Image (tube, rainbow, N blue to C red):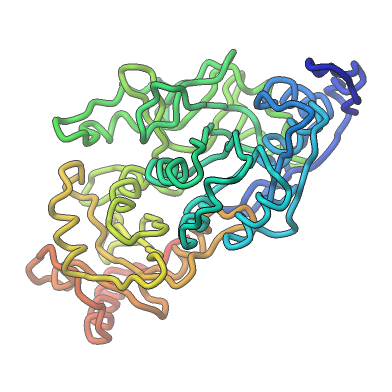
Length: 422
């Protein structure tokens, strides 16, 4: 176990370093499929607490509203606090409206977040008390560059981020010179690379004059750690799933990314986020980053849905900020005028969500969205819908009428395809 200690430098009892004692089963988030139980030894928890204690000291107060059955809360919130022996405050369930009152009540100096939590916090009305907290360290994953900057403006603390997973096979962290939309650089002692389906390293990303990814088809591959298999302790009673992650010495994350000429890694989506439109391959991540710039967007998710004939169409689910209405004409103009929007990247379908489906760790549940596709109930818009039934294409988004819906479904039936995906 993690031992108590005194002084400014925390010390760890040798018994805590045991890599053979199973401490916990941490379930993956389930954002792209069924959750799996990741085995975690006392040695792994102790090692991560030692390495990633975020410069906390005994007088700090760490606050977490993330579920303790998930790796982020365990490794990035609880382990650092336990290692240095500081106060650890918890909330039973995340609440955007309760965040500021909690931080003030507990006197929190360190906050950990995951998924889209910052988006929901920032959707709350701005309050002068945001600048009067004791916060000095904020750390998490998956916040957009816009949300990180807005949180820093409102709370006076710039969030730090890293990319990782419950399995622990890859860690990528932001540095002071990391580009705004990049994940960062590989963690210490990690040989991270972007590999194609044949296990070869992908070419470095090339960007056009507008900052768009010019060689997405060849640059995007799987984020892997070439020596990371030893770091992943396996899925509980699931050797088949473990074997999919650990192939020889290589740990395969199952996530897509690319790497620029300066060595910075970028996230391109989960393995299920690959999209193929008119024989062009790309991923959801870069499209999401573009759509996130549209005024009034709170949260956006991009994913593939089947095309009536072959391949995919791009679909986006958008949750708008409170009080904002979707303007299809403005969105059409936005998509036309983004210089880094790939020629096939603009969504064909857009669903406006009152509430985005999320997992327990505030990650968007894309399997739910793909199952709904564009056929479920709700406010759905289609771009150039006539093209789906053999007419002329255009760039305008219009409401999906019942007549057009029926005509498109007839095309799916004609070509023996289904409109929903999983």
